[in-house]
Image 1 (tube, rainbow, N blue to C red):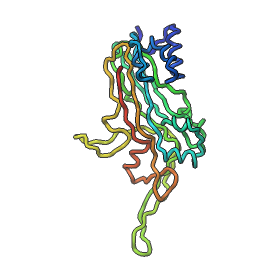
Image 2: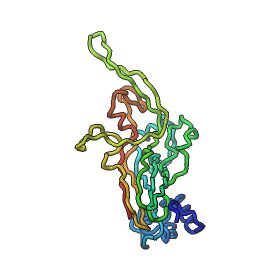
Image 3: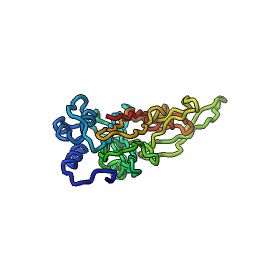
Image 4: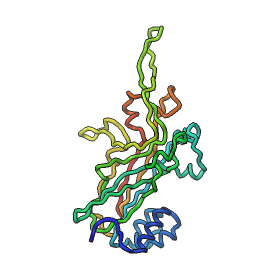
Length: 280
């Protein structure tokens, strides 16, 4: 049996996968209709407490749940200066746009890699053409199905977890000058600008004892770890929490900005997140 996505002519499998990808988290009746394939673990993941069936055998489901939020100051900037128009419902459902790759290694040594993408595609400063960011506009993928005999599920070590920063960031260079009274005054000059883009999320820098030396985007304890030998019928889930944030250099600029010498602020660009890996 070849390892990887199930491409056999099973119309029931294809029908269920298509509907779940398009209508993730939709009416419970839909979930129940695919329950015989995906099983209780998947049903309970998207509708907790509703599963009444056993997990199916023959497949392993990989699922990504994006529960991260967007900082209110960033939302306010986007909806005023950035010209973004949101309905109340869209505002409540805002999620950072995130992408990462999952690598699946099978017991026969075969390897497959899948890119998960989830979050609000509309979340971008409207002064920038969203069509110029094809990675921002690609279709979501937050679940997939692989055949059994999975030996290991893990983040693809060749790619980072990335979050889309939806605004331009201005870099300032600071320096001290002497005023007429003989005192020092800190002045700022624009050093550069970076357009909206995906940025890799970086774990904290720690010493040999685990003490944090530089706080970045992810606590080292919250980086997704591998899952080894999940059983047939299992649901392997990666649940993301946290907040998308960008810096604003106070008393210097009303736009997102930072001092090039501020290592702590630079390390935290993109926000702070935690990931929970589960097997059901």
